[in-house]
Length: 301
View 1: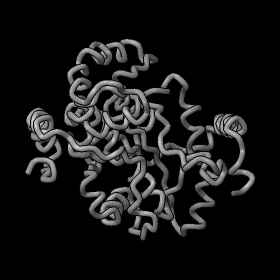
View 2: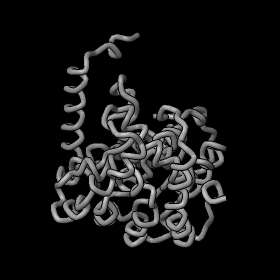
View 3: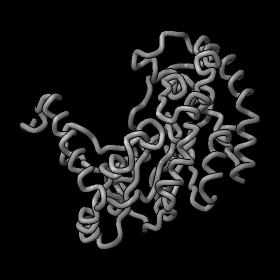
View 4: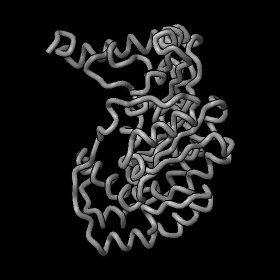
């Protein structure tokens, strides 16, 4: 193990703060992101983001992993949801500079792009409007998962984090009470951050059409590219080639495609609970299919 990899977390934290201060000081040299990967949470967005970074013309955020060796590449900035009060200079401090882009273009032999993946953007009631105002040229990527599986995975991730003590059925029962009024509080006080709205909205975050409409009201339909996690995990290369074409890039082999990032512990979902959730999501899935003009056979057949 190299000496830099053995640095204590306190030293690394100082390094992160120094990079962020430098990024803010040079914010004017840092162009807007080319794409936003807006969700869904527990839908495979981390695996998709890192697969896209394997493309030679997709460059990471700042600082990259080679500058901060104990961390992976930064994936999400969470600006348009939880950090909007920090301002655009702070947001731009995470983006690669024009000089970095130029060097990357010389290495890659063509134009490069960058983007971020913050999966709470999809569900946050103000994120779409904020993004449209501040990065109107961005293209929008979305990876969606069978809502039953996403809901259960979201719950298991919270259990793994030590943040959920209820059983799955009890957590579903408690969701309405836990999240009551939270969306209104967010819209009335834009600096308000709601743990319940982000982390305990297990069912609500799987009702995709409700949230996606806000984004479709903010960006033209041709700015969106939607894939499913089922498609992605069946053939990561094919799905990433489709995204590359949408982003104006040529196809490229992705050596690291196939890795699954941030998996939740495996567990069996009781058949009765699965059926109850499937019945709940059926009209939401039908609404989504109508909204996007495509079917999701992995979920509905």
